[in-house]
Image 1: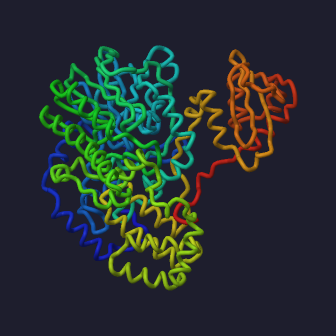
Image 2: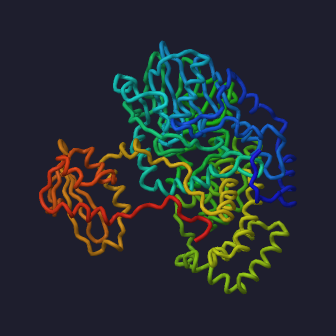
Image 3: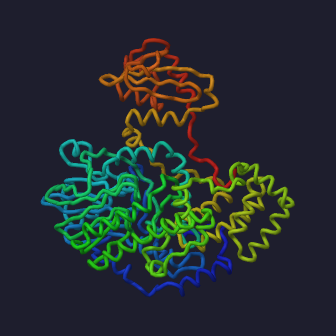
Amino acid sequence: MTRNDDSRPAEQWIAKGNAAVLQRFPFDDTRDLDDARHGFLGAAEETVVRDAAGRPVWDLDAYGFLRGECPETANPSLWRQSGLCAEHGLFEVVEGIYQVRGFDLSNMTVVEGERGILVIDPLISSETAAAALALYRAHRGDRPVAGVLYTHSHVDHFGGVRGVVTDDEVAGGVPVIAPRGFLEHAVKENVYAGTAMARRAAYMYGASLPKGERGQIGTGLGQTTSTGTVGLIAPTLDVTRTGQTETVDGIRMVFQLTPGTEAPAELNIHFPDHAALCMAENATHNLHNLLTLRGAEVRDPRQWAHYLTEAVGLFGDDTDVAFASHHWPVRGRERVVEFLSEQRDVYAYLHDQTLRRLNQGYTPLEIAEEMAMPPALERAWHTHGYYGSVSHNVKAVYQRYLGWFDGNPAHLWEHPPVESATRYVEFMGGADEVLRRARRSFAEGDYRWVVQVVNHVVFADPGNADARELQADALEQLGYGSENGTWRNFYLTGALELRHGSVGTPTTTASPDLLGALTLDQLFDALAVRVDGPGSWDADICVRWRPKGGDPVTLRLRNGVLTHVTGDGPAAFEPDVEVTLGEDDLRAVLLGATTLPELLERDGAQVAGDPGKVAELLGHLDEADPDFAVVVP
């Protein structure tokens, strides 16, 4: 078992709190374990998945320690959930539908057709997807891939597609099915704010933490993210409406569109010939995120609840098993309806009760602190906040309706973190006095307050070793006590970075496939968010691109803003330079893979005007920082 060499054991307050969890919930209920193991057909003989260079990208045995008793350094509820998520292998859902679970953060589902298979959600990395497909074929035969289906626009549901199908196979007629808007949201989420999301995901998924009783034990939704090759093949068939039916290789599917739920573009699938319902990521064995800690658009719990009600109405009478792109299936018509109904009630309750208190003048922090779930929902294991949490989901609902400002004018124009911290520490009598008092709070088990107050010392003086160590110790204890896997990872990664410096961004999703899938409009928008505004206040540069065979696009940098206009209409300004080249070469220049002079030397472009204006415009772009500070200024 991997340990942090400088980690501390659980303090008495955390150990007692974790022990109390064992008395609070029905740990003798083994139905989830039975469901997680049901239909097991076999596990992979090779337990480490490697990339082409031999680098490990996934280790099936990394979580073997979860088979042991829960230690004091872990919340028993999260330990239980992580053990269930760590069950790996090939499983039969029903005859003809199979899942490979435990090979990545998500599941890969395989549906057998007349001669081939439909692959649903091919994981994050091509390496793990290929290993999952190989395991299926080892037990069920070498059937060709007859279709691929993405349930939604998050990378753990499409990134491994090149491990199961090739571009030539898709060009030859293998359909790739996705909900309407999939491609737009898949590339936008991973590019526009992709650097910041990936850096925060390093905290959320804890990929740099050692795996073990004092480190990373899972995320609640799955164990962690694989670190292999992320790809994307664009959909060839869009699902545009609820009730749409499609047949692939004899596999009949009825779709339910669910936009704005767990993803901006998402769908559920009913398989009438199997009495089986795929709920994508709309109903899993945890409370999900309304605003994921890595960052994303705030999700709509009212709509989420509506679509779960609709799913019961559409498919409840014809479903004997419900499965999802994470976790394990639910079996039996009555249990399926109960499961979906309780999932619905969780999101509806959070939405409605947050709005009730919001309209009584309560702030997001106040609502989150007082919010208690109904006893019947709290007793159900699948509603627990292993991945999302009641606390941060309440704040997400508040943010969706009212934004960041709680209405108190004292919070309207606060000092930024470093300036506030410096003043707080001075007001509190200096760093030594703050740390003296904080150590007393630590000894009393008030770790939330220690983290809150010592953060001021760290931001006022990031070189204060005593403050960093005390902050790391307090974060660590909060991690040990957390039922939420992502909270635990955030706390423990914060402690790790305070002790050893930045872990950077272990997993990045802005792959060549995703960048290549950007439309030209999206690519120009992505460049606009990189403009150094203050550094380009005085610039006025106009470049017109004429992609061969396409409409001209005029870019103008003025007042620190990069705008683009397609076509030769009145909004297009007179350019300083006009460049004619192929779209692939245009993308290469804009993404920095080549330069315009290099293309001119190869006769790959034609230029009228001053070619130096292109380099001047691109010179005003900033580079993103994938290693920016989080727990220190």
